[in-house]
Image 1 (cartoon, rainbow, N blue to C red):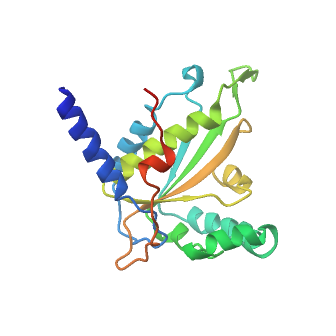
Image 2 (cartoon, rainbow, N blue to C red):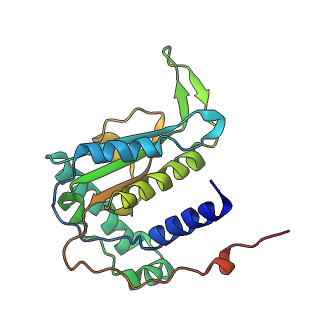
Length: 209
């Protein structure tokens, strides 16, 4: 690839990702499982500390579990908005129009629970250290969001706090910790997208020759 082709490819990808927006209103339009599988393959290509690949993904489609996830998440969100969140945090969230009601947890065709291994467990149940598990899973999640956007889907990174209920509902082992819940699907027709601005390049990047 020539330098000119590299520049063009990099610019095209940056422009495509700049069109990505988080949405909170999803259509119930089905998304084939194969799309999710390929996007998870992209996520699994991420670099990780000591190549330990500490990420674990649980893709949840339609079913009764979705209602339970919504109920548990909204209970935590009500605690957050009514008791735990300081005023400064609530003021920062106000322009986005968020609240404790999370209908998208049932409407969207897919939820992806993302977990990281705090430590590894061998066949004998012995613990083994994991190196940079949160950083590694964060990188994998970024690739997953990019892959889903490239596939023409919308996403929402949902982080109810605490998220212990996800481990229980999704049957995860004791060595895993919930990282976030990714909502995936098509945006609802006429959905509201916050009027946000991204920082210009020179506000967050510098170059040293």
